[in-house]
Length: 226
Image 1 (cartoon, one colour):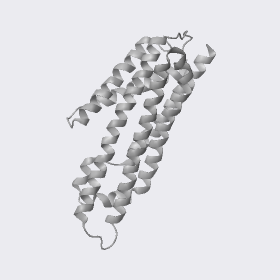
Image 2 (cartoon, one colour; image 1 turned 135 degrees about the vertical axis):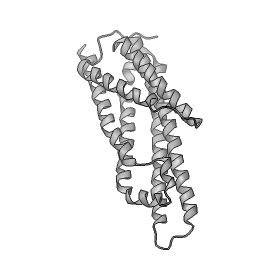
Image 3 (cartoon, one colour; image 1 turned 90 degrees about the vertical axis):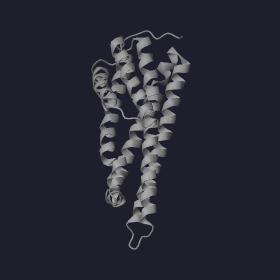
Image 4 (cartoon, one colour; image 1 turned 120 degrees about the vertical axis):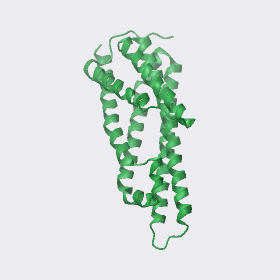
């Protein structure tokens, strides 16, 4: 029981750390598709390049921590089902790759902004168009990262549901919350409007879930092969 409890608390603490670095990363990134309405949006990006770079480091750190959690939990999930363990780990590897790609796009956008602010720069309209495409490139990769995140999280919550390592209602809540994230991300992929609440409700669940893990850890459930 002590081993399960310790494992759960470590996972809860790592998830809290992910949230602690993930929220500032979004604020520091400072990108939006609407910012291109300002003809000098590339100048703004150039002026805020340092903060954006810090945001990228935090974003990559958060994704790397999720990947670490998948490695840390691999033996425990494997004891229940090898396929689940491989799916959980594999989805986080894919997610990490998408996050890296998205941040490379953002770095190239910062380089582009440097060309825009150079004295005597020409073809400014072309640079603005390329800048907008780079912003779009980042956001499409962001939604793909959310989709793989949702898939990996669903596998995890279903594993917890079947093994009873956390209360079944908590695991069911997690599956429902992450399904809404998955659905909303695909709706965005098809360029349809959807309420932000489809995403924000997952934040409420995450706070409750982390609180449970840190306070209680995983329960003393027998994990059987299936």
